Every structure is written in structure tokens, then in C-alpha cells.
Length: 377
Image (cartoon, rainbow, N blue to C red; front, side):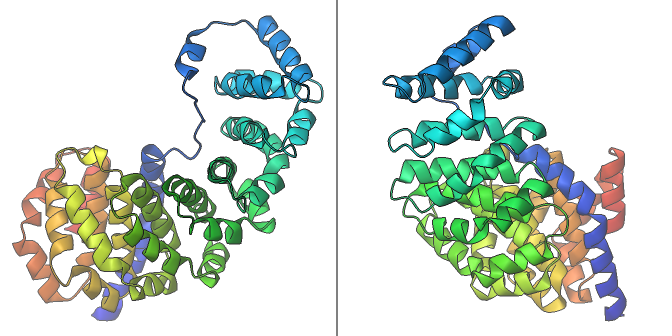
């Protein structure tokens, strides 16, 4: 009966959590290093620990003086080399204190913020140190300087991507309203980084209250407007889709509110366009768009009808099942499992669209493939 089918769909959402987290982390880096134009030459240079310590000490002595800007530019490139350099920096006396002081100096805040971004992109212990700069970065989101806004959002995204402890600390400091406001920037690059940070705040365990705080800020309306205004900017659209995917995960109210803004047909059109691409992996928005539509299909019978009414979702799923991209096939099979708990006429239309041969073929694949296909069948 329908009650049993709804229960099955709810159970399916829960059982998919581990798989979806794993695939998402493969597709989207939770932290991103800021590389500047001449970083390739920097990365090729071999420097031993002793020399690195000397250079870091010299740069820190220079920061705050007449040649501070050059030293900061050099330091941000140096910190992009990875966790070993970051570790040496943080072990240097008064290193973070020096960097924090420069965050208050107009004209040097951007490079100082880039340094913080690269420290936050390192291992968890380093991100915890970078969190000391979080209040500055949150305040920079309100700057009139778009480059500073972008870099601040980037740094906050790296901090939020470290895990629940940093995420919750940022939320307590007011990161959510600041980021939702920043999502309304006229700059595509600012919106892209703000969406990256917002998606990291929304991911992870125990996010119901976090999702509600974003809904209280009417983030779904902001995202819908940005979808329209930046429709041709794939990087922005991809990050906005990740926001929607985490906003709507296991939250029927969030799904209902997003659908009410008219986002569902936009996502369906986006998925259809991405699936038609010759290189699905180049279409970074396919996975988060698919996942969001999967969340819609899992929320209720009424929302399942919204997602499947015009047939575009099922046609896209068939195309994805026929692709060679394993993560997209697994995600598509999860969505099909939700559709399969729907009304019998919808199940029949789905079968007639040609999903069965693909699902049967998956039964000969790896364990995860077999498991997902068996559940859908």
C-alpha cells in the first residue's frame, strides 16, 4: 500500500547517506588552496626545512614594514605549497599574531586573507588555527571590495569544510546571514565562493537546525534569483546546486519551499542540458542537480509527481545509466529507487522508458552497483 511505499522511500533516503557522502567528497573538494599566477614556478622549487624556516622568519619580520605587501604576496604563495610549509609557519613565534594584525591594515587585507585561506585549506589542526581569523573574514563579507569578499568567502568555505566543530563555531559567529547576504552580490565570482562556503556549512551530520536557520533567511528565494541571473555561468550554477542538495537532504519542508520558488523546472532543464553534454564530467552541476531532484522525489508523493510529471527526469536517468560514469550511475539508481515507490502508472512509464536493461546490466558489476540495482529492481 501507499503507506508502506512511503516508508520504503524514507528508509531508502537513510540507506543512501553513506554512499552519497562518499561520492560527493570525490566530486567536490571540501577545501581549496588559493594558487596565484606564478605558483607553478613556486611549486617546482625544492626547498629544505631549514631554508623554509629562515624564509618564513624573514617574511614575518618584513610584514608590517615598508615592504609588507611584497612579503605578504610571497607568503601566500609559500603557504600554497602544502601542510608541511603551513606547519613550519604556525610553529614560528608570533606567526599567526602577525597575520591577524595585518588583517586590520587596509591595502594588505586581501593578501593576508589569502594566507588565511591557504592555512585553512591544510589539515584540521591548521584549520583550527586559521579559525582565529574567522571574525575578520565574516566582517569582510560586507566589504565594498569584491575581491576581498570573494577571498573571505573562500577562506570561510575552507574552515566550514573542516568538519562540524569549525562549522558550528562559524555559525555561532554569524556566518550564515553574512553569506546569504553575500550570495546577492552582483559579482559572479563572489557568489560562487559564497555558495561554496554555504554548502559546506549545510553539509555533515545534525544539520536540521542549520537548514532551518538558512530557510529563515529565505535562502531558497536568493538561490532561485541567482539561478536566473547567472544561468550561463556554470561555476556559479554548480555551487548553487550543491547548496540546494544539502538544503533539501532529509528535509521535506526545505524541499517544499524550494519547489514553491519554481526551482524544480530549472533543475530539470539543467540536468537535461548537462546530460546532453559530450563530457558529463565537465558539467560539474550534473551531480548536485541530480541529487537535489532525488531529494525532491524522496520527500512525498506530491513532490515526486512534480519531479517526474513531464518525463524529463526519467529520460535523463536512462541516459545517465547508459553512461560510463560510475558515480552518476549509482546516484541515478538511487533516484530510480525513489521513483519505484511511486504510483503504479509512474513505475510503468519508467519501465517503458527503458531502465530495466541498464539495471540488469548493473547486476554484473561491482558490489555497490549490484546493491543499488537490486534495490531499484
